Length: 283
Image (cartoon, rainbow, N blue to C red; front, side, top):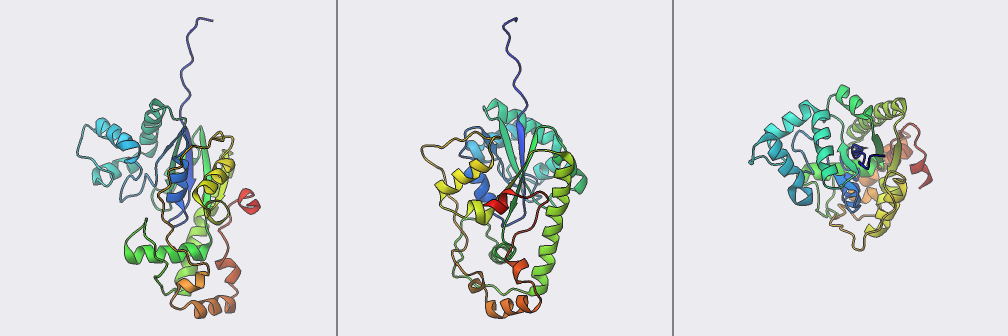
């Protein structure tokens, strides 16, 4: 023994595979309470590299230093285009940055169409990578999506009094696309044999903050040790507090009848299936 310490291991990546309005903001905010996690949001979104403003803009400052450009913001076109052109390079850079901050896990969200399929496959095949599949009831997610699109407001807005009209064909079409996304990434995760976790918005996250945090951290063991902060940071605002999803629609009764008539009611009120999904079924 020469008394020298071994270099720290590279930061482990936790990629949250999900889609819009499936609870990703809430998932990441809860996770950011854990002392070992460095948390981004949908970092590869073409609109913005979301999450860099966390930790008093530590990630954004590191990126500015890398580019030698103090004018960069999360939504800078130059930043988003460059990051998406070489995902591995910038995740490695941020992994090093996270390790310098004493973090052992770098977490980010991956949505459909944010990266080419070949880039997604490479990320899921990367070493020291785990995957969370985050799913939500298809119809609840779709109604939430319609509201966000119409208002152009994606977080911290209670829309319980808002009613939207839902078209059956459009709902089924978009739901099939999301099903394909989970099937494709689920197959790739299975092939890569990386550690995989399954989180259900309704089963795990749709709870009071302290309860949701405990539930999430239990799911993510042993990647993250069980750690309960003295004070939980939770600023998330639930978009709709209506218990009956059909009451959130202008045409709720008619839409439900259409689902029954087309034998799609159970499909609409269930979550997308992911290959090997056991945890969400046990919630």
